[in-house]
Amino acid sequence: MNKQNDEASASEVLQNYETSVSEVVKIIETAPDNTPILVDLDETIFLRNSTEEYLNTLYPRIFGWLLLTLLNFLKPWNWLPGEIKGEVSRDWMRVFIATLLFPWTLILWQWRAKQLAQAYGNTTLIQALTKKENSRVILVTLGFGLIVRLIAKHLPITFDDIIACRFWSGAIDRQQGKNSLVIASLGKDEVARAIAVTDSTNDNPLLASVAIPCLVLWSEAKYVPAMSDMADIYIPFLYLERAKRPGQKFFVNVIIYDDFLVLILAASWLNSQPILHAISMLFLMLSFWCIYELGYIENDIIAERFEKKPKLSETYQRYKNRISVWHAWLWTVFFAVPGIIILVLTKVVFSDTSFGSEVITLDLLRTALTNMALWISLLLVVRVSFFAYNYVDKQTRTWLYFILQAYKCFGFLVVTKINAIGAMLFVAQVISRWIPYFVYRFAKNDWTEELPYQLLRILLFGFLVIALTLGTQDISILVNWQTLVIFIWCVYRGRPHFMKVVRQVHLISKDQWDIEVKTTTE
Image (cartoon, rainbow, N blue to C red; front, side, top):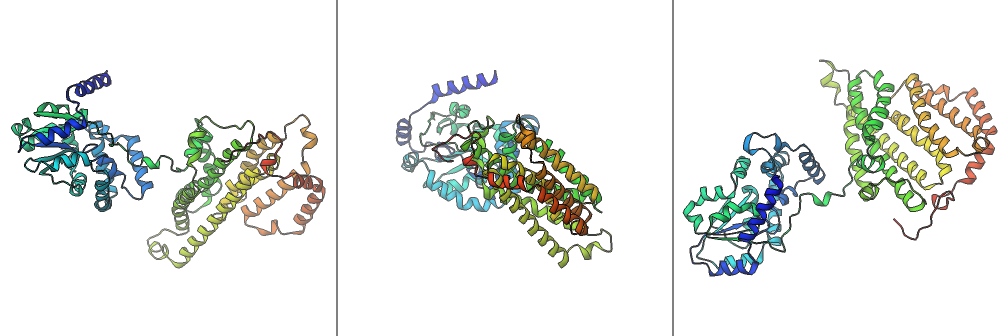
């Protein structure tokens, strides 16, 4: 009902005060001397929105985008009391919080405001106003003084006064409205004989108060939301949630409740600082999935390109272009750095006598750098492996899938340790993930005849031996005559299957299962 009333009110304002550009120019040029001319800023004399342009200056941009996205999600302006609660305070809270968290924006704005003023000044209106040397031209806006004054400074016109909202009391000023601010500054009599030029139907009270109201929409004006060019930016896990597994809460149900908890039970449980270790593993898990997610995105793109009936979600097209390899790696490092630092700190014995002398040492720094190098190397291997998985035929993918699942558990052992029990949990996790995929690929009418069980035995034996070696940190399990002889026997028995698998490997583009040849490329 309120929305209908607002629309009706806006329509009434348009009917009563709407003026063409040529009429506005004529009114200004023929106005008597000493006539106050009240000019709106946003989308009027400045053909953009000053608040949005200021927020678009936040740097680093990715964190500015995250802040604005978080504010739009939380809507803290709805938490304010009384009459300042709600949308009336939205812009003030966004500017206020962003400026406090990104104070250097005020410095950047000095430079950017000049550029914007030169690029988006309303030439037609400015030329008409500059001819009125004997009239007072007053800039009136619900924008914020610290933002608009710099734009006004660089516009090719001198304003006799600037009426804007205060930074600290912006919510109160915006709640009072433009008309109240103008009357408080100029007085009713001055306002009553003024000309007002604005593009906003919300300025109805001001338009009703002046002698000559001009409501005009400028064709060159645009409202460009802050960070709108970041709409297609890569955000970790967004593709998993919105495109790969929409509606399944993949991040929580799989990454956190499954993969992360398995890692905690196998590794953090034994650490002398289990809470810190768990936190470090969380950061490293997020780092790992930033790269692993790239494989999922790539997998869907390849499926769309080569498969006759690809299994793609309804939201795939909306999110497929948000892939950015470099952004993914930046996020990976962003999560990895605190993860590695916290992991190294778990090696410190926290006590009054040892903390100060042991936390920052050359050995710890060397350990952190080594762990970071090992971690990044692991992720490079994961990325290459997933790339290979995506570009080989589907039957060969069966064996690479096993390796990809192993990375999710055993990959973390490049920076941390587990025991034999943890190793067995990892084995159970990997095999439980792989078996359904294995059956999916081989489940045909004659699948038991084609089942490469000899090769399967080699894979499982080698995997279990390596897992136990890593879990116990006992290299003798892997390097002994018994292990060597068993492995040689398994390889000999499974050689026909092994050679068959090697011979059938080919690129996904040559796969005959469900290919549809396309002339277009991604």
